Length: 112
Length: 111
Image 1 (tube, rainbow over the protein chains, first blue to last red):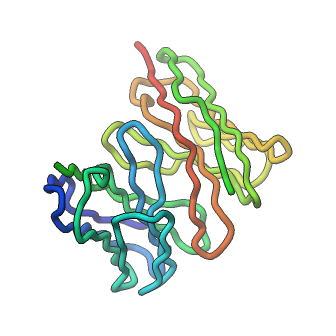
Image 2: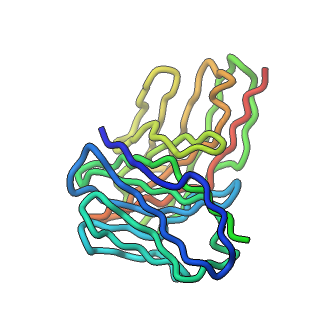
């Protein structure tokens, strides 16, 4: 089964600083990959998804970007963080022929 | 578009049975999933219903009625460790199979 690694687990960054969150997947090839953000006590908001290397789709206009340089690597970035970027960032994957999504442990980001 | 409605909170006592409902509106329907998320943790998959009826997995069961655009998650013999948020979700059409999640139901199990 799939295993998703995310790091770091927790991150405190000043407003205006850059961001790079990495997600890697083991145990499957050619997965669909997703980035979600979750505000405290709220649901999951899909930010980006990717069906293959170099293929990125954005769900909402925002201060963030994503890249997929390798089949099982998904990166979330920002050039200048905003206070509103604080939240719990979750990477997820699924096999293209399955509905089940598997989530990584998440990165808790606090922008001060 | 897609939208899902579920109650924001449910409280029950240990050993009891609780049902968490989910109604959905979608332009195309492929199935209804349920995920569990403990405080501070990541969501984990519980069940997926593509067809009408009840699917049972241990103490948890999930039901779907496509004609009513409705499903529920049934938790039996509640344990303290079942205190968590529960999300229903539906996939969209297309290769990416993006999920749209409900806002979640916070279940509190009391001793």
